[in-house]
Image 1 (tube, one colour):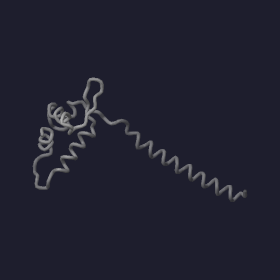
Image 2 (image 1 turned 60 degrees about the vertical axis):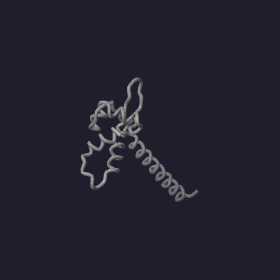
Image 3 (image 1 turned 180 degrees about the horizontal axis):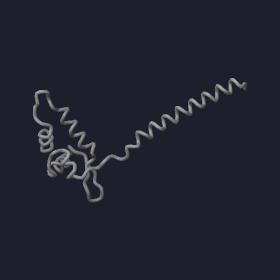
Image 4 (image 1 turned 135 degrees about the vertical axis):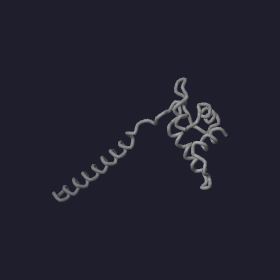
Amino acid sequence: MTADHEAAIRAATDALASAILAAIRTEAASNDAGPEQLLSIDRAAALAGVGRTSIYAAIGAGRLRSVKVGRRRLVPASAIAELARGIAASMTAASASPMMAILSRVLHE
């Protein structure tokens, strides 16, 4: 093997190693957000602008995801966001109702 071939192989190997390390760093950075935040029923209700009973009703009806941790019922923060996105998607241009009134109506259906 000539010196030119060795240099070309070494350069290709270094480029590949750099690309792999960059991909690993990018993936690690995206995983640094940590686990999803779980909200108490009180906190979920405050964020949604409704009462605790409405949150429990939405969970019971299957409109709001929740998890059980020990004896506590917790709501993933993304579940509140999903509910809000679903409501926003169902809003029409003619609707002038405030978002919280719609959220309350959906939770009570």
